[in-house]
Image (cartoon, rainbow, N blue to C red; front, side):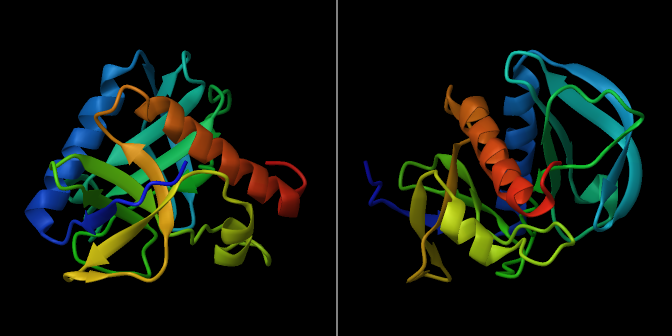
Length: 190
């Protein structure tokens, strides 16, 4: 079934900060344990809290501008309970505080004001073959059109889901699993 609703990308820094806080609040509502880990990303190495949900078998590390000093939210996700001292995210979904189409993470809202987490498909991995083309050819989830600066985009992007919806953790896990499958095609394993 296709969703024909057009979502409006959040472009106001305060709205984006509130959306990040809501994302954090909603994910922290699911049963989880918090573990201190070293998190390796393309942007560097950081020590921080990683939350693991046994029910959904997903881990997440969510930080905002105040915690990182960056000009975007920083949200890392992976699967399975971290067993080592360090983790490498399968995917980061990092909505910027100012509109920047080069950054893949996006917060958007519908006409009712519900907030959605979206992804433009630019996945990293540090290896040739991992990127937008791989994502577009292999993404199995829902896609939506968005409006930015009042103009409808001619390209659909991945709709991970409404962050306040009861099925959001499951949709997020499906998204992370799907990206993990894509990367395994190139890496062979993660």
